[in-house]
Picture 1 (spheres, rainbow, N blue to C red):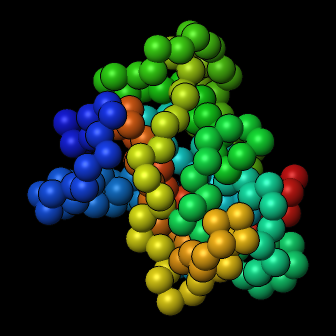
Picture 2: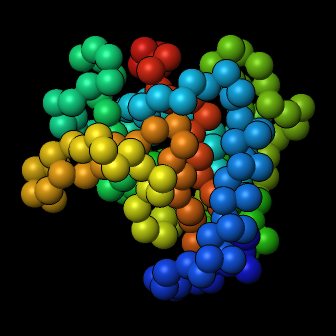
Length: 184
């Protein structure tokens, strides 16, 4: 994956690069929650980076007033790709990329799933993940639009088939839609 996306690259991907990227996305999905329904992504979707050690929840600091099923689950769209603890995407633990960010070395306890299961028997140690997202979320639902007043346009919402890419080679995919999440 790191051969496809190079530092500072803002160019469109070639067809061969897109094919390799989609293959990587499918590998990431195969490792995810096979029970995740093919439906709309909402605030609280559990995300996984193929280079990160810890999944994280997708945040939506400001709701657009459009909900998937009830007022507890606001929809998200393809521009919800901002990085930061108070934005959409937080860090994914330790970066295991072949070309990790030049960040602090950290040690984290193993990730514990919402069901209470540890994902590893040992701590994760290495460079702290500092994602830099290359463009919008991809594979959005083009026929379901959300008006984003900050961008003054309608933007396609996301489904669990969406993915985005980090400049360090990670592919970020949802493990769940977020509709199961109640904020705990």
